[in-house]
Amino acid sequence: MARGLARDLDTPILGVEHVRGGPFTRVNHLASEALDLARADAHLDGGITGVMKIAHAVEAFGRDVELHVGGPAHLHCMSAMRNTNYYEHGLLHPAGIEWMSAQGFVESPERVTDDGTVSIPDGPGLGVEIDWEFVDDRLTNHEVIDEPLVSGLA
Image 1 (cartoon, rainbow, N blue to C red):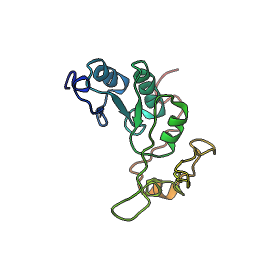
Image 2: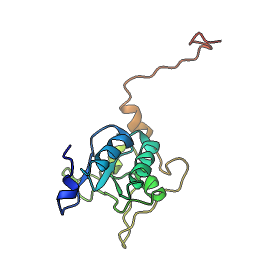
Image 3: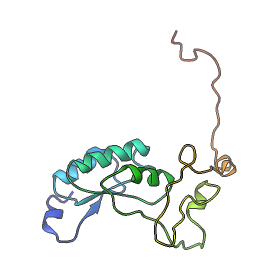
Image 4: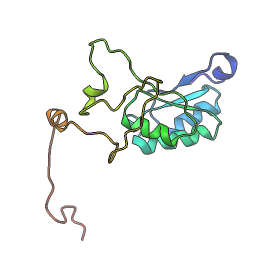
């Protein structure tokens, strides 16, 4: 970690995108003045709960959190966070596919409107329909534990 880097540079530093450690890593970097903004990702940082913990910890420093990549979980997180400003949406993909549709959703949960906004899905759960065939095709193991008291606890 480069202590004081954010203090010494005029360019805002956004960081710890792929560094695990949840809110503790972000607090350490912010307290050391190594960052101006922190990155969070529901897929890598403990789900929606992890992202919200990071958002609150970073907010205590008066700083913003920017979410890594889009998707329904991040849309919902952003709608509940005060300290975020940008929604990352991949407009182009090298293979010419709609990236989010290739992630196991029936339709893309991200629809950019003419005014540049993206609506929050409002159905049950994350508000999107899961492509269960996509999920089943990637299933690596399936085990059903149906015996009572398997743990041996009474």
